[in-house]
Image (tube, rainbow, N blue to C red):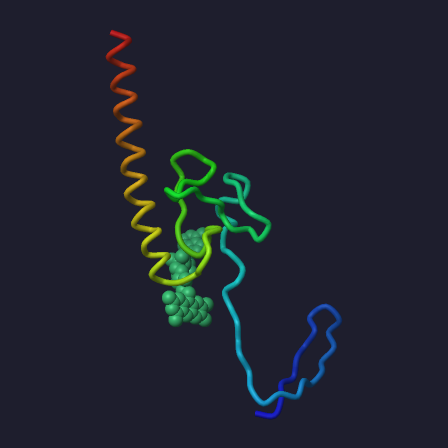
Amino acid sequence: MTGIHVLDKTTNETRTIKADGLFIEIGTVPNSNLVKGLVDMDQQGQIITDRNQMTSLPGLFAAGDVTDQPHKQIIISAAEGAKAALQAHTYLNHQTKEAHHATTLER
Ligand SMILES: Cc1cc2nc3c(=O)[nH]c(=O)nc-3n(C[C@H](O)[C@H](O)[C@H](O)COP(=O)(O)OP(=O)(O)OC[C@H]3O[C@@H](n4cnc5c(N)ncnc54)[C@H](O)[C@@H]3O)c2cc1C
């Protein structure tokens, strides 16, 4: 290659940049709109989680690239997904036990 033609979408102007090679970087914007306003996010729109993958909304867990955890890699996302699932199970068990305890006390 000898260069690329680029279009500035704001000004609608085109120009040519001379270059011998090209590295394309994609996927840097977190797709977190689904829970916007529901959970705390950092300035980049990444969902903030604690070490158990819990978000600021109790019972809602997040994992992978969409979180504020560093190192966006497949193995890390998969591990966080496993952690989130296990923690969700623990959370639900705890809720059930608390509900059962409250019912027993009421009797
Ligand atoms: C070009 C590129 C190269 C990479 N190379 C490597 C590499 O060599 N090795 C490596 O380990 N990692 C690599 N990565 C990083 C790796 O791809 C990510 O870390 C990993 O895929 C993150 O997994 P994830 O499940 O968190 O997110 P994703 O894989 O992005 O999965 C999220 C899924 O959720 C879906 N989704 C989004 N919004 C909604 C919604 N509202 N409703 C329903 N579904 C929704 C999306 O369609 C998508 O299928 C690369 C990334 C890029 C962009």
